[in-house]
Amino acid sequence: MENEIKVRYNDSELEEFKQLILDKIENATKQLHLIESAFRNDSDNGTDDTAPTFKAFDEGSQVMSKETSSQLAIRQQKFIRDLNNALIRIENKTYGICRVTKKLINKERLKLVPHATLSIEAKNMQ
Image 1 (tube, rainbow, N blue to C red):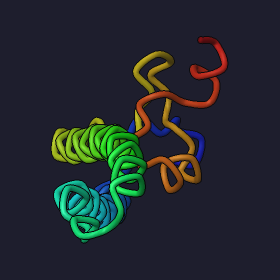
Image 2 (tube, rainbow, N blue to C red):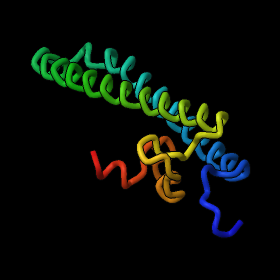
Image 3 (cartoon, one colour):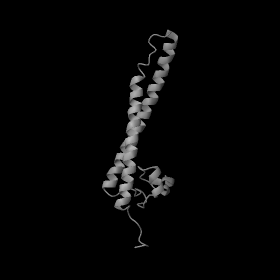
Image 4 (cartoon, helix red, strand yellow):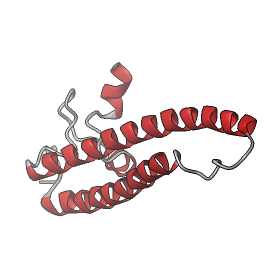
């Protein structure tokens, strides 16, 4: 048993990763809601009664801020989607297996990047 090559993470390891991913999804969802509410509130931030020149400047920064918020929201949505896909791989018991080398992805890498589908070895080959 000691010399046997490990083909997948065992159920208790998968459960650990599942908890880690669920926590990350919860935090990422909270951040997404913050980004979205900032995005909505940007259009009304109390400059209605200020000088016209400041208002014009402020509207310019609002556009920039809306673009940034939009990009952040898109990135956050992709992160949440990737984490949800990782949960599916946990259910299928294929989580943590590199899709290129078919070897187990290092546990430390998965703790840092729980949605990783490539080992460092495969990533370096790209």
